[in-house]
Length: 254
Image 1 (tube, rainbow, N blue to C red):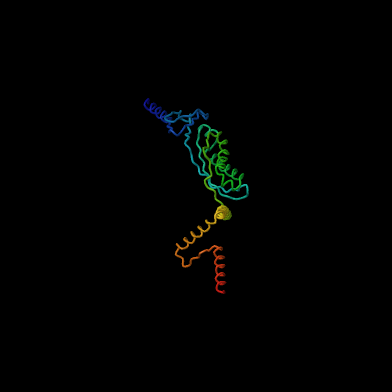
Image 2: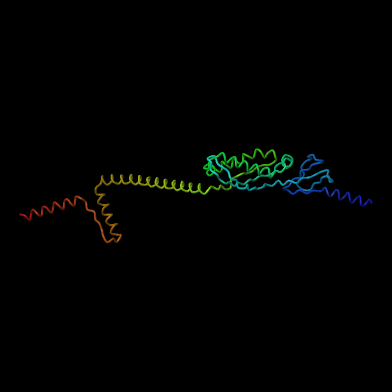
């Protein structure tokens, strides 16, 4: 009889043994009231329903928010995906203050995502992602502190636009590229005109430079193996040749 009682006592004692991993904490309740945190490692609670332990994982969790269809401030319907990183920093609050901490922070993240996107134009959502991500983080970080949760990051992962809006943005981007190309071409022509003006002024100051340039052009044309070679002759040479021809005609008439 004594052996049976001893065996029962041993089994009762063993039934109260709990083990918490390094990344776990045990939230202990005694007769329904919070008693304290236990772990990591081996700990013991009073069995037979006197103590109850709830094991909480305190590692960082990554949650991919489902795609949300929302409307921006400028009335454009877009679909947004986001990713949330959070961890439990106070295991007791995550059990006592909220019924289901992971579900609560997930729903809070979805609500914050829709609200923040609705407060900004489409261009801001696409071009100022860092700013939007900071606002997303701030929108839920203050709320989750009371639940013993710490939101580490909350960022947009992908923004899906309607097909019609994609076509409009493609046309806009093409127009911007064409404008940039025309501006660059105009700047190049302006720079070339300045250089040509400077060259013309230099040649005008030294007429011999024009003849040297003409001879250089003739040599360049001849080097290309063209069938026809055009030689530019100064107008002074033409006038001189015409005067010489008139002189020869007068000599013949005598």
